[in-house]
Length: 434
Ligand code: GDP
Ligand code: IMO
Ligand code: MG
Image 1 (cartoon, helix red, strand yellow):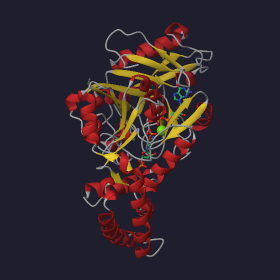
Image 2: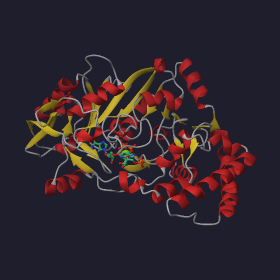
Image 3: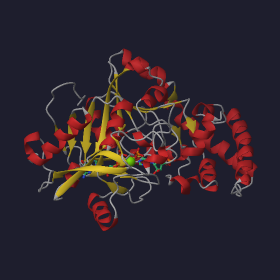
Image 4: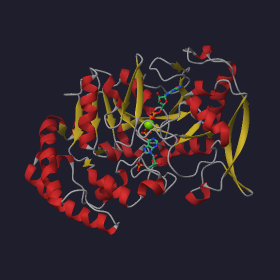
């Protein structure tokens, strides 16, 4: 049975957590393949809200086993706290979580470096240390989860890296908060202890997934962030530090591209972005503020106000190409109810040029002016809709237009944050695993 990959089509926060939870009903494994605690995936089950940062959203389905793959960066303190919180809320994690030994450790000094180098201010990051930890990984000086299992090696590596970090901080006009030897001593003890605690979960997750697929089990690869935050294909430099597109599922889990059979793209019915960078369809002024409050668009990780704007088709088309999206899930359609008209950017204009896909030069993004098509809005609350026939004709037309414009079927329409607030659209070709 080939794996399914679920990807955000925009700048993150498309509602991936909710959809992973939904598809989790018919999945044996959910595997995270990139990013770290910068992600914030919200899932609402029976009125209870869970926000997951490192642990895959599949954890809320008791029969699902979860993987944190080699492509993820693991903040141990955060992980331990997330496990504790879930367990205290009755979600069993022990025995169900598989942590790759090859995943890199995100240590407190990664946050110190990010702040000292003002990366957080320039990019508008989540301040979780993501840039510096991936820099260390690529610079081949990272410390990995498997190092936790050998306390002597862990102690030596921490000493070496803290010496290097002290130099980096000094170069940026900052200092370690405590003497280096003291930090090395404390961390060696603390992280070796966490390693002992997690030892049963740590292993070769690539092997576990290959065996699961060979047994015919269903694997769902959970994307974090979104297509346009991808380090290569996003709006560089206003991106995260990892591959967030579908190819990242192969490298971030050790699956071969041939083992990926389906790609599901999750897109909001409009667009949002947190942090800096271009955003051609962004709402301005008072309408933008009113819309954000009405839509509840505040970051799940940092609480920052999200910038909001109309749906952007050049972006969606590019997301479809880059990820090989077979099926779309459209979320937050309920939020658009009550607007007299809805706009969709079908192309960009840069001077006299017309683009139907985003430019490759990130600098040009800033100069893109959207070309809009106006569609009629609709009245009424969609939250109670469960079947296509429950959706007002204007909503069905909006969805159909998106299918035509992108060339991809919309399989699920989400009309609220709850697990059951979903409309399954008729299947004409392909099928979604739920
Ligand atoms: P993720 O990072 O892609 O998992 O998305 P987030 O959890 O950061 O943000 C999505 C937000 O929208 C969360 O607060 C969800 O509870 C909420 N949400 C998801 N789907 C819907 C929907 O169809 N309608 C509404 N109103 N809220 C939704
Ligand atoms: P989920 O998985 C939205 C954004 C940050 C910033 C840029 C770089 O919940 O969709 P980083 O801390 O990664 O170095 O920040 O990326 N960003 C996200 N925006 N949702 C996310 O995750 C994000 N993860 C990172 O706001 O603009
Ligand atoms: Mg999020």
